[in-house]
Length: 237
View 1 (cartoon, rainbow, N blue to C red):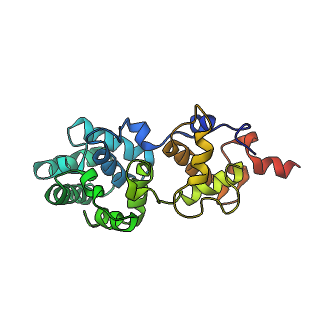
View 2 (cartoon, rainbow, N blue to C red; view 1 turned 180 degrees about the horizontal axis):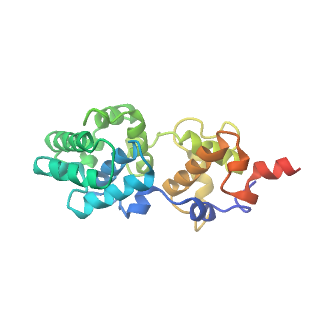
């Protein structure tokens, strides 16, 4: 299947955009990456994405939308908000956010852009992020960095989410061997020739949901694309 059968924009409309887009976070604005780090930490925990995003909204509405704001008196307030949002282990999460905020403030002036600016490549950048607080592991770091590939040079080589790559292969948007490692150059090249294509982060998020539900499991009967699913079409001959 090629992009003229199922378009990039149609895929995002069907399966939803990246959490950054859903939350209305501008990653190019001051405070944008910090807000996204808080949300990425919540998304890494047990529970639904909807619950994590709602918790992020409640924290932001209370002036606690980034880890630095959760330091000090903000820690107890964050815990109460997370508990009210029915998040698991709200106390531990509030402490993790506060610790990350304190470390970010002490070492990098509260700015993730400053943290990233001196990093010599992806490995160092990932290590700096993981050092902010226990519990910020490799999966959270990769989740956080994916929408920042084209903004932070050290994040450029973050590989495509494996579930997203599986879905892109099934849709015919990637050939075998493309974008297996490093920057997703092949997918980006295809997006850039489509005038109304959504940002890469929205495409990757939608592809990731598709891949998780069906493509990586080889379960076309569970595919949310219904009749537009290429595997279903092949099964029908």
